[in-house]
Image (cartoon, rainbow over the protein chains, first blue to last red):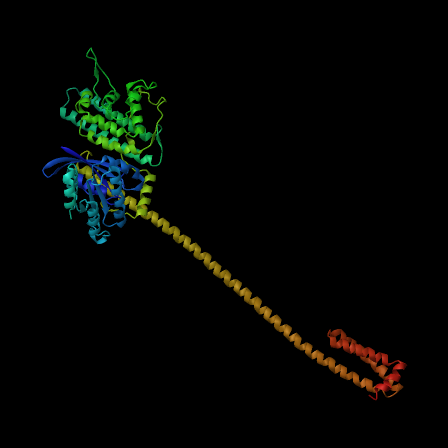
Length: 183
Length: 403
């Protein structure tokens, strides 16, 4: 089985751990407990092909920012999470992508932009069009998820596996990135 | 020690059930991996606020955990006589990590103050951490499957699926600046690596770290989702628990959350009570100020009224002075008949002198009572009358009479 190293990034409190734990164990974490780092491993079948995901759930708070370069260097695919109910978390996500490109020295790193907490629609601060526009600018898929109602969580991790598969074929990757924007 | 005691138990059983032995081995592996994860997290958390050196209990615990993992089910070396002598994990590391670029294997091997194989292994752990390459060493060693299988027995942690997570777990340590002294006696290989499990029975962020997180969340305004039913989901490696234990755990968590909320509300109540008592005292102070101000106002009013009365008295005194001036002019008019009597003759002049003596005491009294200039003038006129009594004045007085 192929192994994929996925790193989940985003500012504090957007729901990185909730998304990861929802995917790995199928349960939702209500209580907020800031993550230092957590490491998960789960088998997944994507397009009839079994794979193993090693998911690194990172610290969103700034005091552990020095470790972000380490995670980025070690990771293969990246899930960038912001919260739909927090405009600042959407602003914070842009420099993280710049950091990934700088560390990897590669523009077309496997990447998915995720707007979490879609179940809190009445409190929405970031429009879908904003997220979609940023994803198009980056040439990566865009999803809006809810760790609470388990909306699009499995699809998210399946998609990052596909992205990492495509990145191993540079020629095919160019075509795929321009066309497979998920809405 | 946990791993050794478990090994001893399985050894003493001899022909025990394989299922029980397998379960013991699985529990042992999961325990070591979980404690390794916790010790790494504790180190990362601590390193944000302190320098990590030989005196750090968190580091010593991590080193013991790593040593236990790398020594788990390590094969002994078979000699010519078929006797199996114990080995150290350093014998495995120095072979498996030869290919790591810019490795410190030769340096460790040539250290003079470190003699035993175990001590060299401990020195290597410290140097690898200071080099920020421990994760790379471990992942390189584990990828060398042939060497790993040659050095470890079946069921070892490094041969199992858990080993795949080990390198990822250790990656975060590359962000920490360690500071170790390799020339002291701390690297003696005689004492065993003892893991202190007590800090990890429950992981808690240090209070500094928690407050730092909270401040940052307030600053960035990140929203957090909290509900009335908290659930702490453990890592995938967590042991299976029966439903009753899970229910009890959930109830305990609810109780703990409620207790925290109660503590918060009590603290809020205490704060409000303090604010209320402070407001009451301030209110009293302000009322006192009002009373003092009112009293001062009354005193000032009385003083002003007294001044007004005094001024009125002075005004009346001035009016009576005017009347006295009028009296003075009347007295002057009374002096004129005296002059007319002087023209009659000597007898008349004698009578005039006698009349003058009678008038003097009253005039002097008037002068004494009054302090005005008008009374002074009348005194002067009186003196001129006294001069008229002389013989020469008799000659002068007839001259004045015709005029």
